[in-house]
Image 1 (tube, one colour):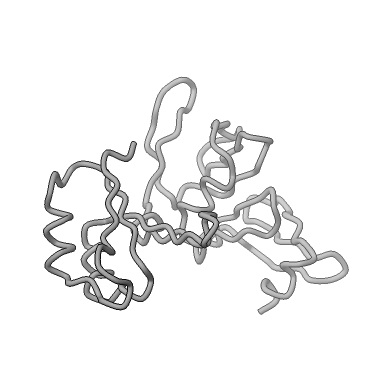
Image 2 (cartoon, helix red, strand yellow; image 1 turned 90 degrees about the vertical axis):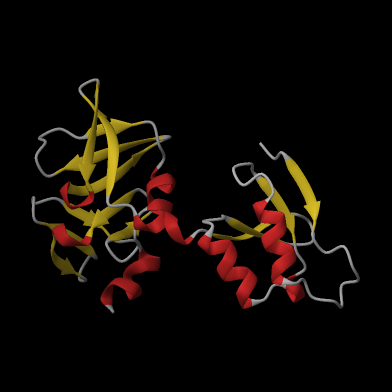
Length: 181
């Protein structure tokens, strides 16, 4: 919930915002959510680093208020996930996850030490946004694969990944070039 809406760009658009003004604003009620509207011309490196240090999520909107880009550096540093396994919430290390498979608005999580997949009520997109894209590869729209469990890459006749557990994951036409590099 947005508790406060403030347009920091109070002066004319040609003047830049001072870092002290931004610090003062951010220190007012530090635990409350804030919406800060900035002109991109006013955004300098000092203000950007201060916002990142406070772990602020930033969203870049176009003139029609459509999301152009989401910036959240801390999101991709997840080392473990909390999953409900047999009705009990457990913390699973990322190294134990072989792959994720989409199943509508649900996701099957294939774990190293489990014979059956663990079904979660999160979408594959949810996991793709939160996990490091160098560790987890997305060969096509319904799979997210831990690169540590990839045994072999086969490009011809049909491109696919062979995993250490013996499963084969198809690589989409559009992503073949990226995987071949």
